[in-house]
Image (cartoon, rainbow, N blue to C red; front, side, top):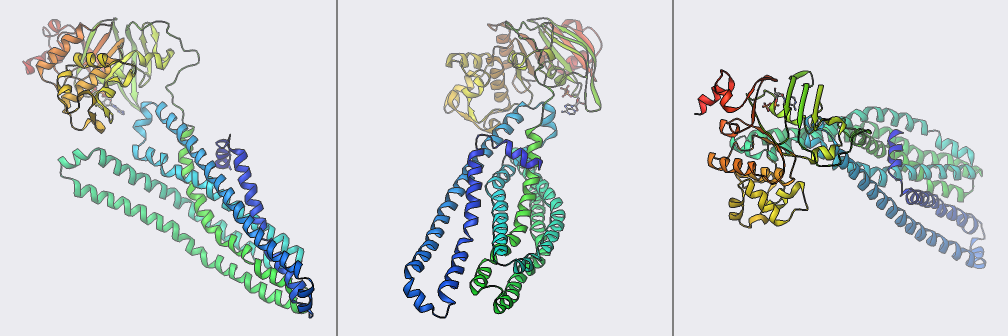
Length: 579
Ligand code: ADP
């Protein structure tokens, strides 16, 4: 019921259309009765009487009119079916468009934890296959349930109007159908939940292998991965088959019941006709309409199957549809009236991923305009620390302040808009180099794009690309070296003229000469900017105003290059090693 209510809420704006489609369905199904009704009249009026030849001769006009009306009604029914199908189809497409848009908006708003806990393949399954089940339910399942029900009820009413006893004999079998369908529904439901999960697993594996194809190739794991995919594909196929075949367990019961209807109609109807309880015309009408009871019975399996499939898909969609992110603007968030200055302060900050605490009681002040390098072993918490500034995650304890404001009290758009980040894991979009650089600032002029590329020492190699700034760089920047991608990412981060620039190991893949040039241009940016540089190399950190050393989530040392090389510790060790 909840699922139907959810569908209904997404039909707003199209409800009139949908109800019209349903009304047309009802009209159309009811019209199926008209032809046998008329046949019954024709039989009783023109065929059964002994002087039928004379009646036909004298009342030929009436006979022709009745036959013409039968043809007319059939044509009309076809037209109505066409119109209602069109309405169902357009409405279902509109609903899918609306739900997909809302889902995509919601996915985009989610925080980092969501992306860590949801597999891309699973999200893609929700956006594609599951969506199609929503369309199918609006355009087909509901329509089919309604039409089967109307046909069933209208025929029963008509049967009762002809002869109650015959009608009772015919519907005496319906409880068998209800019990069988109820058991079938209970058995098949978990099968569709499993089936949905298998589909998601298969898609996830495909997605991982396609995006990670380089690793697969580098380790010559193609055969292994093909086998793994084959297994998942087989499992999906087997689940599909099992769910589809489940109906076969119930099919004989339903089919025998449906066939029994014809037998009852023949035997009971025949006896009653001979006894004169019903007319021959009514007997013909019963015979002509027996399918209106049998077909809905036969349809039950398909409808239950489809509905269970829809239910498994819809539950997955609804989870995303109503999913709320914890990292969002507070109602009383402060509005910045001027550009952020870039003062940053960590006050007793602790942070955990789940149960594992990775930052412990961090206290650090960074003044606007300063360049601060953060160094420390892999896993010491450098990236996490910087992620707390832009609220990729929220602190567990303590506060992160920007210009004196707790970041949780700032508007996300303003906070993040003032921060430029070049992440460790560079992702370039399937767009031109220019488009990638202007990603955060689409109104940039061509000159500005070039200027940012120059800051990142990328202009030279970009101009050498086949189409220069208009070269399309593929998904994840296929075709560029690691260092080139890093430099485009740096240009992209600088392009938003941020008050805070965070560079996470951004120059690790460029040579020292290039790094020196980049550092020089970063020192002379034409806008005020606090720079936080996460570095592995002494060369990247040595000129910073402050170098912060992280060790297992705590600050183990702070100082300038000359101070830190004076004392024992991580920095001096790395310095000795890299000299
Ligand atoms: P660094 O940047 O210094 O290499 P990180 O900040 O990336 O360190 O990671 C700090 C610790 O947090 C590591 O132990 C890492 O395994 C863990 N970690 C990082 N990201 C996640 C995550 N999304 N979920 C759980 N643990 C994480």
